Image 1: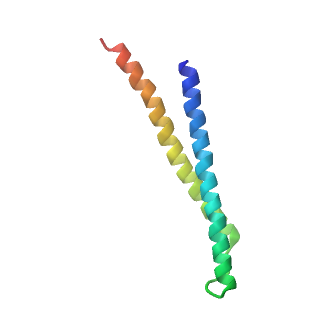
Image 2: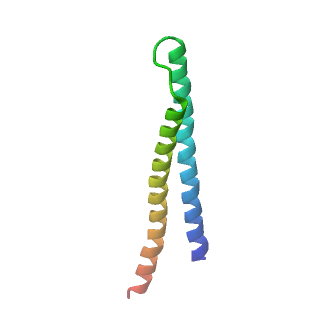
Image 3: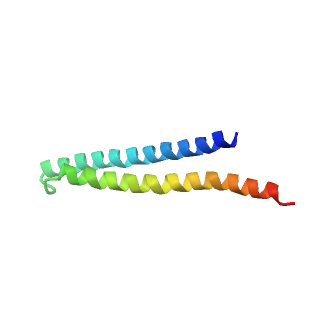
Length: 89
């Protein structure tokens, strides 16, 4: 049972990482579209799609990694704390 629960926590970490990465890449896409529209209306420079998307991807990887690490660590800490409390008299 414990192995299955640990596997579920790890799976949740992967899902959280993917979710954050997707959110940041989607934000990068919207940011590029807005910058492109501003450029076409004469209100800004010509945007670089590769630069905008590379920055969005870096931010997504960083945010996803941080949040998935926090969630998985908290989940695994519950097992460690539960195991410790059952060993003490």
